[in-house]
Image 1 (tube, rainbow, N blue to C red):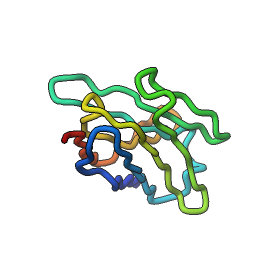
Image 2: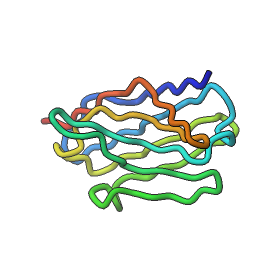
Image 3: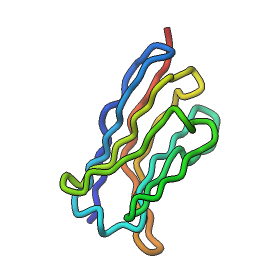
Image 4: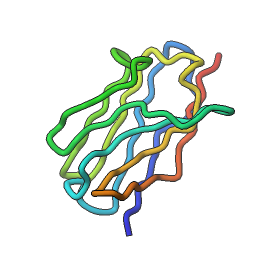
Length: 115
């Protein structure tokens, strides 16, 4: 069974930075792609960033230039480095892994941007 465990969320002031981590229970090479989604209150879950097995990345327009997704294959971990955070980034952030037709999700980690 695939387990994805997120960490690194918290409260940060506008303009601040956070790094989220997603640790997988097995090799992340098993997944076609991994990514981060977020869901703010009253809104649908949206893709923030994704990275494929070969390192190809994709970002939502709203985070381009501020967020960076990366992976450490040796640690079976995917990261989301977030900079220049603003109130619009406040949400629960979920790690996602895709393998074939299957999607796997972590439990989510709260990110709150507030002064």
